[in-house]
Length: 421
Ligand code: AMP
Ligand code: GLY
Image (cartoon, rainbow, N blue to C red; front, side):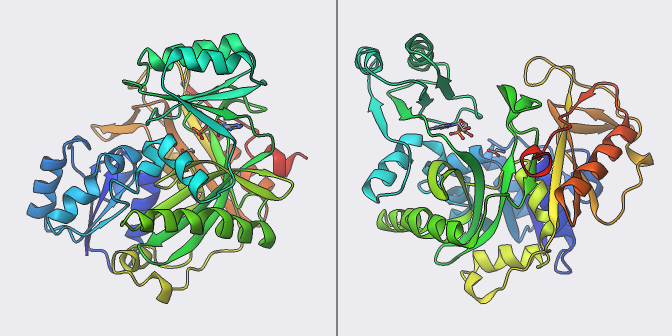
């Protein structure tokens, strides 16, 4: 089969690598990919927002299956667009992608289907919002409705901070805003829960915990993710059953009631309190870096899983996992998530000794004259799997130290809640 993967991050490198291990693959194209995907696939320089050009390329190259990595093309309807051209594609259509594309869409589903989540209000103008905030308890959470690359969420300790956040949102910081979402602040421990769906059936696709804050001890600004581990330390049979029964099934029913179905990965961001799950948000894709962390644990042919989703026969497949612990540390450009420099040469990559349980997934990298250069804030993902989280982290940190890249920084405490307790 000829496969095309859309995206250019660590997630897409991990997806390409796992697909490349399938005996059913003859060729992989990454649109646009990075220096890592370039080793196993052919990178095709097309803007992921240019659906027409992507379609023309896919038809010309006789691509059998397209896998969409990031949320933006999904929310903008790339799946509907390609399916109209009879191109087989793995990912949710435009309406179900609103689960990520509109936080208010998701909150309304939660209310209608009794899905546990933070109490919330939707406000349509600044005056009403300010009035509400005057009598609120703090901390409180202020959210922009649409996609905001993880930046549209404000945890506010007092009314001044909340008013400021509301102003920024209505002033258009994340695009034109018709409304703002205000949520009760939930206390507890976070967990990422993944399922894979074929439109009719779904199966669990592991759990993980990511670290979004830039500094050790989960301090500082939010980032795209500084590292992750899988499985989450919180998961147990009872909790898993509650997540499925109270959150995942009612959500899939809501999508069905809209006359749609859900095909693709569904990623529930949860808060767990006293072994009870609350939905914080949905993403309609794999997480990054959770994907890089989870896929090395997968035993079943990944392409077979994706194919069975596209053919609505996921119920016939048993997805098998290694009973190991995976941990990922993201190596970033100095300065990220603020200003950072690109085009810094990364020298030692080829010299690193990886064994079969170690993986390096590229994110912001590009190749020039056979050399690898940085090309983004999150540059490389180091992953190791072993029988325990600490051993995995020790191995990853050893490899990163051997890389010794001068422009890098990374967190050494990924997994502290399950390792350093
Ligand atoms: P989101 O982009 O919705 O995942 O939000 C980013 C982060 O903000 C989450 O990972 C949580 O750490 C935090 N967050 C969002 N909503 C809430 C909430 N209602 N209560 C507590 N923390 C929240
Ligand atoms: N790691 C968080 C995300 O992918 O949204």
